[in-house]
Image (cartoon, rainbow, N blue to C red; front, side, top):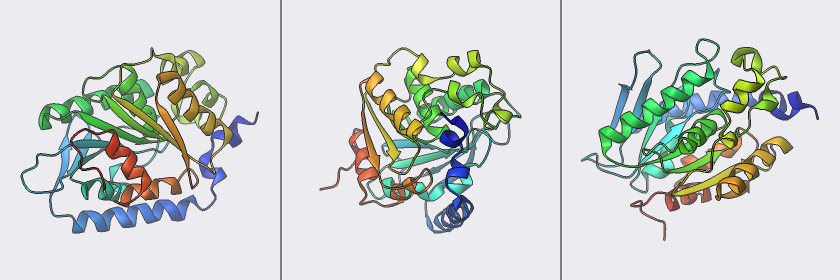
Length: 263
């Protein structure tokens, strides 16, 4: 198997620069238009350990979701993804969007620790259990939090999840991660005991590689969750999160008690 071809998503989708540029543009426009947002809340000591919280209505009491961005733990930040809150906000759900430090400046184990700190901070601040939503590397963080049975995050919607990291070790992706096989296994959600979660629904794009399809099924099947294949490639499958009427938003709502389910 050509693992580089299976996991190098930017090479698989040559038009990715335009897609990412569109994310940045749409996210900025959404921030400018949304009335109630807390920007740049600090959950840790470094500059990137900050999150934005988008609230659906005055009063700031609502079911809470947390969106973790991708970028193979070495690229991007929360500013590219603000608009991914739009779909859930329309159904009365608040959405927090954190950044985190990146490899190679910190090891992946530190990023997992930061994710746990961010979830604990948000749950303590809001008093609400969190639905974890993550894309790619962010989906890995959601799964790690669930697998470590973080009380703050009992349910998850991982999108294009990386549940088994050992296949990344011989690829170019590992140049920044610097993972040994032993470290990769230890940081893999599928190496953790099956957690006692409240709900898990894993999603993958129909145009993604066979390895992403395999990993999505493996996590859902091993942890007793459900999975679905949706239209799109590794980047475009995120688009429905910004649509209140999409099936992806409906799937998130079903995982989050107290949310307004569409009729």
